[in-house]
Length: 387
Image (cartoon, rainbow, N blue to C red):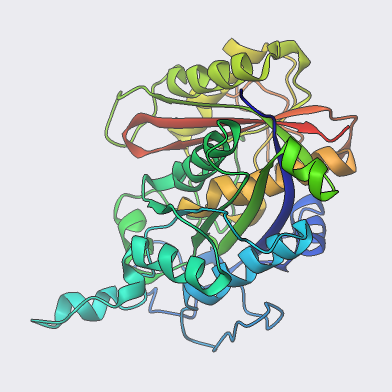
């Protein structure tokens, strides 16, 4: 018999720092993390900006000025914090990770004939390493399906818990701004040229990358009750869809995101009118925001409250779904809709209430987090406030 899935712990890292308070101050407070990147030479690129972390407040992580941080220590810190918050020792819990692997050595690897790739550049190796360090169980899986990778990890973990294959699962995602990925997005002219990310706004010029990682402990409601664990939120529905419209552009009507959202709502047993907030994918690119707006209106109607937290975190690529799930959880818990920063003026193609530039107090019981990726991949999560 299917069991309810709840969230009992999380750890989160963004360019604003480590932990929930950094998210509240930076994301909900509308901070601006975008600064010149000093980890690699940006002189050949259209922009030098990203949401990069430069402090020293992450447990077990040393940030060396001018160097790209390693993924493993950041990821380990988030997963350890999630387990500690949940009061769980990790025994019996599989580890599901969204990551493209640690990219720091890639430029040197491609220039060196006969070189062996560093082990942490292999996503599966990274997942196994963190799981081994923390005493987690199997399966240990890494998902590499771009910007829905950690959403896929969450969905896979939730399905394992819901069907009784695991009583708990640790689901995570990590991305650290690195030269090779930055260069690829720059060559595709996807990066913002004015130093800001302006989702749903007229005058938006593109996305910017960001450092980010998050881990969540998903648990069966029965297990959480037996342990006396505090339930932070309920994960009641999830959905995935592939529109296969284009290699990189979304379906112009947002059909894939709409299909994923509908599937998640059906699983949750929720009518679209019951949704109080949608954390949109909202990349700040011309095609994504217009298409997503059409899909949002199609599913939720014209009055839905939406925001894009990529306007403050930057685009976290494989880590996006996990970090935005934590942000959505905090919106439920605090009764605050995070703002869409950088907004200049309305775009007729993006006719949604995107909470421009200032957070908004709200009674949020049901929220949806949406993510999309190249190739027409789409995913949605329904989170509900803990009762």
